[in-house]
Length: 252
Ligand code: PEP
Image 1 (tube, rainbow, N blue to C red):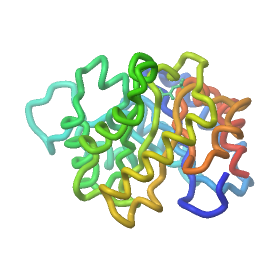
Image 2: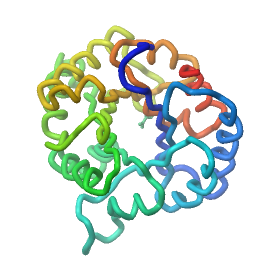
Image 3: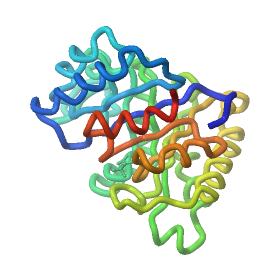
Image 4: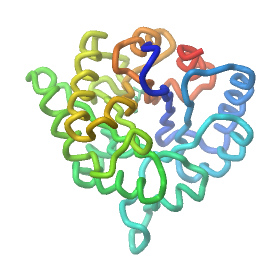
């Protein structure tokens, strides 16, 4: 991976997995990383109902806690939703917004994602903004156009390198075992960096751009070594401490 540039981030998105029985995994991870010097930040994003339990497991470690989604409003009549302040209070330092599963299953538009990212910023949370093309869009040669449009629509005006992370996650690579070629990853990440330059000015250089989509221990080193890849957003392989560690190890 690039020696200069922003400090990498490896974030695990547990999605709707993991009740209390899952607490053994972060416990193991804390133990395994205890004396390891890392060149990356590490984060786990468990389901909201166990955030506080995971937070107490992570106590004393450098592993950070993130939420998987947030409502854009500060409070009010939004049954089932969670505000950014609530996530902050539960111990989160970041929140994933605009994951393709939210965009697809919950109809979240770029505008909604932007409002959610703004809510994160208001609460002092990092917004991990997900973008990525579908297989149809890639086949139609629209990957760069789609990611450009998603970025422009989802990035709030106050975005900085400190409060925003971009996760490039091709929809067709999520949970499928498929990944783009390293050249394709490098192409899209360079494009995102360049688009961020237009949207954020000099902040773009230090803004972390994660790759996500079927990252596992066996392909992490190659994917993470591509230019403009500043870490990973990991789904399935973050559920077992040993697998997640196999990815984090790229940054030892
Ligand atoms: C994700 O959903 O953010 C993801 C990257 O999933 P997976 O690693 O399982 O492909």
